[in-house]
Length: 370
Image 1 (tube, rainbow, N blue to C red):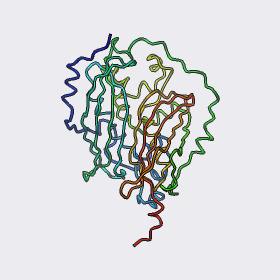
Image 2 (image 1 turned 90 degrees about the horizontal axis):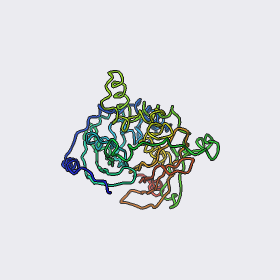
Image 3 (image 1 turned 180 degrees about the vertical axis):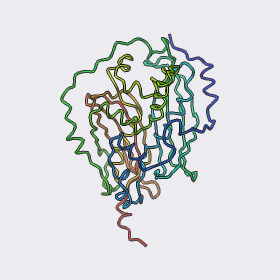
Image 4 (image 1 turned 135 degrees about the vertical axis):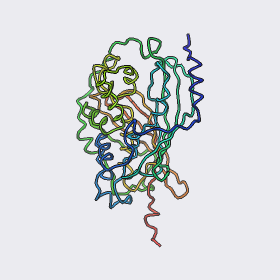
């Protein structure tokens, strides 16, 4: 029998389509760009690009000073947050995918405001969730001058809690297959190229070219570092307050949206998972790092998307890869489109996505200045 979503819930969600909502950054994380917050976010991602942390290096670049990693904006408000805030009472939420379009870098002192809107609500019946609702949303990030810094869009899944939810059915703990080989990623991680101040010219890029970034094996320390420096700091504070007060009224929803299930292996195993696992937005940051390392200081990350699929568990060694699909000119910009994926050492593709980057042209570099 096909599962049916309560039409009243769908109608209520659809009433919100197109209505602007002001999101409060204080509920989640940063309200202003600072050198420390840029560095803490980069540390939580394992991104040691000097543009994010070294004032002398960054001052000699075209930016004239330290800037934020593009995906740092998740520390203000996640694109997923707007959709999740509309979660029906008693239902659970699950991240779907996130897309970004970046306009200008965030600099120290920038004060960020965020508005968003629900753009679509669709009923779905899936094998893993049963009856579900897919909610699409978009958000706009602006600085103190009302300049648009970036746009984000996201899709989240809502599905009923309790025994009616497909994911809530009792499960036997999932077992990971034995490692096919010892994890010897250190050399590969050290060999990862950071283009830095050496320009990657558009003319030198070929379709089919690949960029590969082998990450360190995921550990509990890396998960904790992400929670401290990354987008979940607001949720971490909320968890601490609820533990201190003894209030567990929202605990079930926090297990889905907060960091607790990701960090605590016993809670993860109770949900049928083999252990602690990554937080979805980490992968977006990994792919952002892959791209900013590949394009170098002279390139711009224009668009980035990531679809969250399977989980990355503690003990897994992720590899991020990008493949050039085509290159083209748009006015005076020289653009390169790439397909992205994150794959574990077990061969599981856990995320797919895409990127669009702008690179310098050799013709521009050799044109005499006027």
